[in-house]
Amino acid sequence: MLVTDKVIDDLGITEPHEIDIEAIAWHLGAKVKYCQVDGCEACILGANDRAIIRVSDKVLRPRQRFSIGHELGHWCHHRRRALYCKPEDIGSLAPGKPTPKRAEEKVADNYASNLLMPWKVFRPVTRQYKDLTFDTVAQVASAFETSLTATAIRLIDMDHTPALLVSHGPNGRRWFARSKSVPERWFPRDELQRESPSFDVLFGKAPESKIARKVDADSWFDRYDADRYQITEQTRRAPDGSILTLLVIKDERMLRDEETRGWSGRRY
Ligand SMILES: [Zn+2]
Image (cartoon, rainbow, N blue to C red):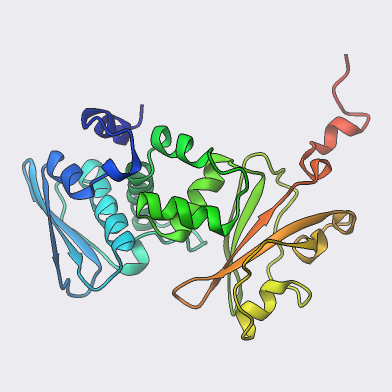
């Protein structure tokens, strides 16, 4: 059982609106203050069983909630230390070699996701939505008071639908998440292709895509057989100028395990 699930159970939480992050913090011995936090976005100072979490009053509510969850993660896993978390430490998905500091931040981020979107509450809510689109993500994000990005990643982790979530900045792909039902051979390209509608959202003035559009799979995947399939893509702008694209795979052939079709497949 996750430590966060115990907290959710102890407080009898079963619905998204009951996830009151300040009440949870209080239950765990931490008081939350909203103020200007010099040089960082949130910090925690604790002694014995009591702590104070300071969180920036300059950021949006979903971000504040995630930061409080992140600091509670440090309180649970890295106690007896004062921790000051910069904006890039919280909810950062930057690829690269994991440093000890980054590993700790990742632990704190996972704690925040598990606390704000606990599986036992998240799964039943999200299963009411048949299709995974940014409309679905936005509605779930509004129910849980979480950011679009954090919510979309959670839906991918849950394997709501066979899909990938890809983040691009002007210098190429920044990170991606892939649901478990999508085979690893579907690895997104580094660079956006001109024929993808997302290209004009990032580099031009095209509006965000209201609906998911069908595109050839080879505009996203550099594989010999990619031109045989179609997928859907939908793009949103993120607050930092990057874009977030949701790629949904509906063609069952793309989801099959390659080996089961060849001579090395299972024999009965
Ligand atoms: Zn941190």
